[in-house]
Amino acid sequence: MNKRIAIYPGTFDPFTNGHLDLVNRSLQAFDEVIIAIAPSLKKIPLFSLEERVSLIRESLKKHRRVRIEPFDGLLVDYVKSKKGTVIIRGLRAVSDFEYELQMALMNRRLNPRIETVFMMPSEEYSFLTATIVKEISSLGGPVKELVPAPVDKALLKKFSNR
Image (cartoon, rainbow, N blue to C red; front, side, top):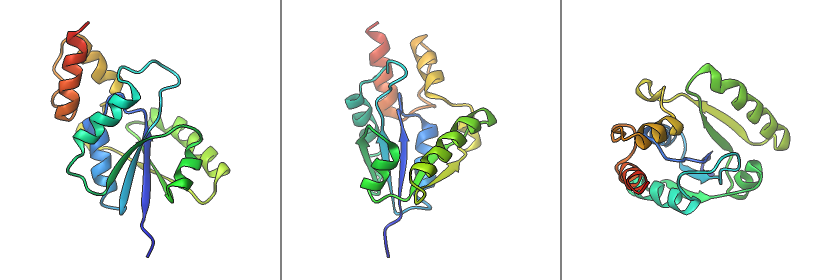
């Protein structure tokens, strides 16, 4: 039987407990999850690509069926190169749906063999975005309940140097 490999793409700037929730829930349905970290082309990220890879690896070091890798280029090409069949996308609210639907349909047009699976985070993370985490942290607010411990530590360090 072939391994069921899902790709969970994103910029993850930073990786939040909402992202972690989707990884854990994805592992219930798939044999392996690859977290594919994209460079942020639309905005300047707080953490470099290397920092994001490192922080996610540290946050998920106990997860044996998860790989963390940077990628660029077309997502469907990356998914195919990893022998993946599914793209995992998180939906927090209706406002996420329109954009995600457009992306899923374009990815299907580019490669009809790759499906997109939409997952909603647990209710406690339905409001959570990386942007909100960065804003709260930059203003000195606590985010340790919103992000894995290594990310919290990195945010404290990043904003104490400003």
